[in-house]
Image 1 (tube, rainbow, N blue to C red):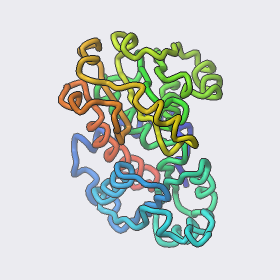
Image 2 (cartoon, helix red, strand yellow):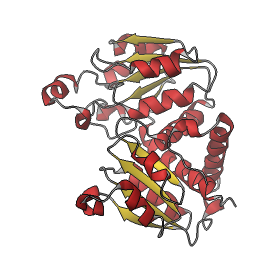
Image 3 (tube, rainbow, N blue to C red):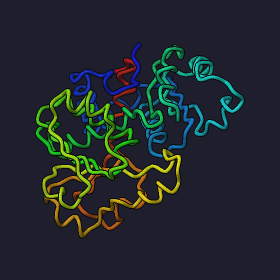
Image 4 (cartoon, one colour):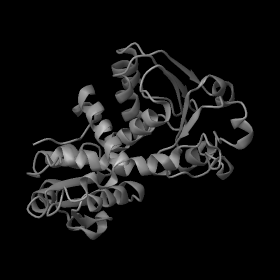
Length: 305
């Protein structure tokens, strides 16, 4: 029985296999329409979510399965003090696979040790978001035709941004990835990530507070919001939240083929006027997220048609 808690749980060949399977599903949507008939996904979302939760639900429904679960920890027995271990032991009696989001780092890992069915980490605090990383990788591959030899700029909250941490870790597997890290001085990539992933894998990187100067060199710009829910001090959030805003004027300085990505939700960091730019890929990421989660569910349940 396999789980997906951290993107490093998957080897590079396994990553590539999932991306290939997702691409097959995109090209032939009916390929796996009944593959999970009779199977249930439990979506346990202790923290609010729109895209990730609905993406998992849509993925399972498109595979012919069904969905149970909750979208608010306050509506579960956790509100009565039930432990994560007891919750997943119980849910594992009703479902074949669990997708779990939790505000506490490490909660999905704990769940995987007690559930009795495959557990997918759908986001744990500021730590990890491996299925968003899979959606990001699929988007990059479909937009650029490759996962190597790219200069990727990450912009915004790089300290608490779990999508950034997971994607950088995944990209470290591929050759020729250069990183441009654009953030306020208060929100840089954590030192542990620089030491254990970026420097360990000899990934060239630069750090800057100047997004406009960096744009002309980028193949991909990955924007992130400054996350209010990760701040203890609201004054710091207000001071930093609009530090970087991508608009149509700034896009004039970018390459004609640069791709703009964002894990969403967006607040102010990308102007809505950028949405009609053919380089905007963030809504493609949303759709790609459903397809890659379909591939992941099929793989973890070992139900491949």
